[in-house]
Each structure stands twice: as structure tokens, then as C-alpha cells.
Amino acid sequence: MGSIAIIGTGWTRGQLTLEAAEILEGGAKVLLHTERCGCADWLREKGIPFESLDALYEACEDFDEHARAAADAVLRAAETVDVAYGVFDIRDRSVPLIVEAAGERARVIPGPPAEGALLAHLRGETRAVEASDWEDFHLTPRENCLIRELDSRELAAEVKLRLMEVYPEESVIWLMNGDDAPVPMPLYELDRAERYDHRTCALIPAERSVTALERYDFEHLNEIMRRLCGPGGCPWDRAQTHESLRTCMLEEAYEVIDAIDEGDTDHLYDELGDVLLQVAIHSELARRHGEFDIGDVTTAICEKMIHRHTHIFGDDHVADAEAVSELWSRNKMAERGQSSHAEVLRGVTRALPALLRAVKVLKRSAEVGLCDADAAALAERCAKLTASLAEGEDAEARLGDALMGLAGVARLLKLDPEIALSGAVNRFIARFDAAEREIAENGGDFGHLTPQTLSYYWDLVKLL
Image (tube, rainbow, N blue to C red; front, side):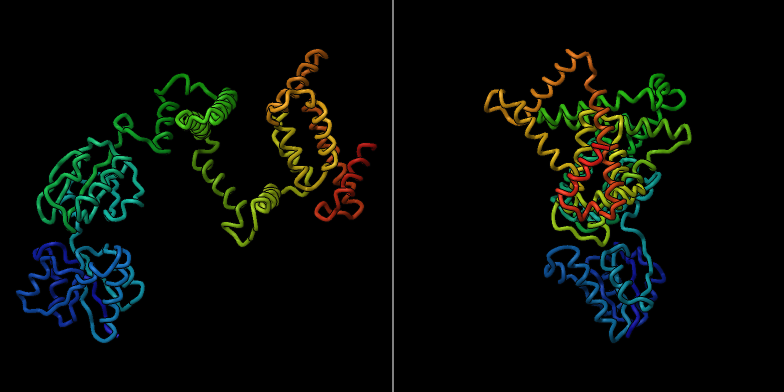
């Protein structure tokens, strides 16, 4: 098995390093990624035989297939002789494939980067990408972006549109063809240059002023909140506390619901932004008091999603959405260290409106099969209550009318319906707890009892 020297040749013959020249003259079989480079001219002048892989461009469907084919060609050649493989830039996609497959037989001799003189215009962090990967760009305007191999006007147009999702369209960028001097131009003219080929590169400088941007990401929101809540920031924001913002969070959540009910997507994303603002300001206030920061918030929710979706991120298997719900409940109980279903009911936040809290408690109790009989009886009573309403109305409207009627009864009796319902929810949880303990004392298990047996225990504890 032969060795493989992977050489960064650069665009022109003058960019060959002394080490690269010595290897190319050393007798190894020379393979060039393409002969459209100055290295090929140098090899001809020196009388050094070489082969190119240019034919692969026509034979392959995309860049990934081309990279695999080039790597395979180099590895096959190295089965019998030493190989010197020349690429413009050692970041070529074929290089890591060769390094991984050849192991210690491969060594890399870096040459000048494809961006060349564009590097003189850099300040700060920079992201370097291949133009053909434009659909997968992960960009932020806080970083410079260096783009290699803008080999056609069509590709430059796709890249331009992707860049303008992040950078202002009138940003001054730099375009360079091969070893030509970089040329400044506005971003929106990226696809209007005279020529493009595999040597064309572009530099989009970072834009770090939030007032100059046209689109913003999550970190920009955090940056704005740090400024508003910091020294010299907004007096109102600086005066807020978690407690003072409680009603704001509730109001914004209800406005999201309004937007959903309206079917207005423009209104929806605007209201979702207001909810996100509440998350950002609570996180910034907590950070300033040394409690937690936005990273703790995102970590908590990501961990929660991973731990509860063990059918995606673990070894559990589910057949349908109902099984997912059951698995979610089990994982949630384990996560919270809850050993009984009554604890799950108590876990429903008391800050919810009483009606919503009642629905969640009833839903969670029904998940273990308890009180199904009571639910059926309740449905019968509700049917009788709404029988006099006009036919043709949907179930939601009839239910709303029924609840409105109960609210009227509460008014006549001078009772607070929220307090009344909250008390009923508390009594329900207490009975549920008693039933669960009674079942456990008799050696029973929620998951293995019939609905009739569950109803028996429910009726039993109501008599206690």
C-alpha cells in the first residue's frame, strides 16, 4: 500500500509552496483534482507526468457524489504506489474522506487558502462555506462569511438570496476571481459580476449594529434586552421584577390565542414575539441577579424534550399518538420523581384559571382509567342541560352557553365561580389520592383494574 500526500496547490503556479514542489518532484504518482490550475502548468514545464480527475465532473450528479468518486480514485491509485493528490484547497470535500480511509498513510500539506487576498479585509470571527452548500448555511450577521467556489451566475443568485435573509442587502461585500484583486460591491449585486468560475470567492463582512439590520435572530433579542436592562438602559425595563411581569405573560399568552382563533398568521408571529420577549426579559432579570440566564432556559427545555421523547432519542417504541401520550406521562413522572398519580394531579399548576385547571386534572385522571363512569354521567347531565338550546349549534357553542348559564347561577347566589370550581378541583384530587391509596393497600394497580373496579373504589372513597 502506498502513501498519500494531499497537497493544497492554490490557484496559480506561484502559490505552490516549496514543500509541495518537492513532493511533486519526488516520483509519486500525481493526481490533480482538476487541471484547470497553475499547478498543472508548472508540472508540464517540469515534464512531470500527471493525471486529472476532471472527467468525474460530468459523471457525477452532485458535489457529494463527486467528492466520494475523487476519494475512491485516489485510494485505488494508492493501493500500489505512492500518490501526490493536488487540490486547490485542503478543505475540498474529498480530503476528509481520504484521510479517514487511509489513516496514517495520508498526510496533508496545506497551501494558500482559496480566499487569498480577501483575508486582508477580515475583522473578527469568520464562517467559511462552500457556495454549493447554500441551503444549509448557518449564518449570523455577527460573523464575516467567506464563500468559496461561486462557479456560476445561477449559484451566485441562490447564495445572494440566502445571504440577504441575514445581512442587509446593501452591505458592501468583496468579490474575487482567482488571483484578481478583490472588488467591492453591494450584496444585491453578487450575481451581476462579469464572470464566475470555480475560483470565485466572496466575503460578506459582519454587521454588528442592531439598528442596521433588517432581520434579527434569538441572540439579537437577548442583546437588546441586555442593553435595555443594563446601566443607562430603559428606566421601565430596569424597574421590572418577575412579580411585576406576571400579568404581562398571561395577557400575551391570551393574545396569541386570539391570533390563532382569527387565523391571522401575521398577527400570530407578532404575538408570539411578545411572548418570546417575556421569556427574554425574565431571563435577563434573572441573569443580573445571578439566578439563571437564557442558556439555562434553553437547556432546560431541550433536556425536557429529549428525556420525554425516548421513542425518538432513546430505545422506546410506540405504535401511535396515543402510545406517545402514555409514554410522555410515564417519562414526565420519572423526571419529576413522582411515585403516585395523585402527585401528577397536584402538579397541575394552581395559577391556571379554574376551568382550565379542572380540564387538565380530569384529563390526567382519565389517562389512568379512573372516573370514566363519572365522566359519562356528567356528559349525560350536560346533555340534558343543553337540550333546550337551539339545534344546529356546535358542541363548543352549546358548552359555552351552558357555562354562561352556570355563571349566571353563581351571580344570583353571590358566589365566585372560580373559587367554587377551584375548590371542586381540590376535592377531586383529594378523592383521587384516597382512591389510589385504597387500591394500593388492597394490592391493586391502576394499569390492571377494570373500569368497574375503578368506579367501585371511587364511590367507596366518596363515602369515607
